[in-house]
Length: 304
Ligand SMILES: Cc1cc2nc3c(=O)[nH]c(=O)nc-3n(C[C@H](O)[C@H](O)[C@H](O)COP(=O)(O)OP(=O)(O)OC[C@H]3O[C@@H](n4cnc5c(N)ncnc54)[C@H](O)[C@@H]3O)c2cc1C
Image (tube, rainbow, N blue to C red; front, side, top):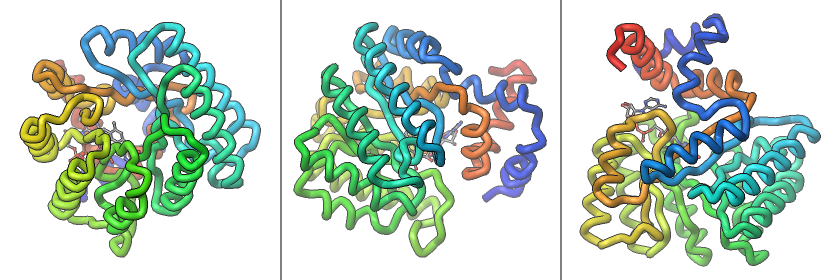
């Protein structure tokens, strides 16, 4: 980890809120459902699909979890009403995973059923390693109940992930493959970037060989380049293969992938919890603090 990134990350709590908002703005749609709808409509206009995330995580209040589930149901209604090309991404810790696993399961089921009612889909984001088993358990329960409009995220940095793929083989899940954003100990996760990339590509080939639907969620040129080659070689169709990028990150790559005929989906966060979310994200992954700081400096220098 670069010293400068760590320094930026530790000084974040003293950064004035408006400044955090200044750089958070680029990475989120805004605070309201209307902001999310407008951002997704604009993305659809340039040929990108979206997956919308209501900001909030590690919620320890039962009423807030209920409010989060309500917001997702409203969001799915709005996506259908506006005929947007979008689905939703949820976090179990926002729906009660750290209060009572049953609560998180019940809220997730409600959101997945609401999506099914609109012919839409739900992706369950993957959080820190303490929630991996619970998240995959919720996924299995819902699939065994007959709900198939739900997908998971697998993290290439976790040593357990190949085992999880084998354990999920009977369900042939739709998978978003990511490196993994949380700081995990070396006994659980590869910490060397080259090893994470090697595991990412091995997992990608394995998932494609299994015929599962895969979303490659990365901005890493090496991973995106290899994924493009594989998609071309195997003639992977958009219903089985897509790229996913974060809102506001590497927009030229987004445009290039769309122009090359790939399906591209942008992760669009919105909501009032933007401040806590931004600080936590930046602290969890100081290298992001580094990108953001460099981005702000470039912005101030008028190069954006
Ligand atoms: C659509 C999507 C969904 C995700 N869902 C999850 C999830 O459910 N669970 C999870 O653990 N992780 C998730 N992640 C995060 C992921 O695990 C990585 O931490 C993140 O994508 C950075 O890794 P990278 O593969 O882009 O490669 P990196 O090597 O980290 O980044 C490559 C380049 O991309 C740029 N870049 C990357 N991230 C940013 C950023 N935030 N701001 C500005 N520039 C950036 C930089 O130029 C960097 O050099 C998701 C990522 C995406 C794109």
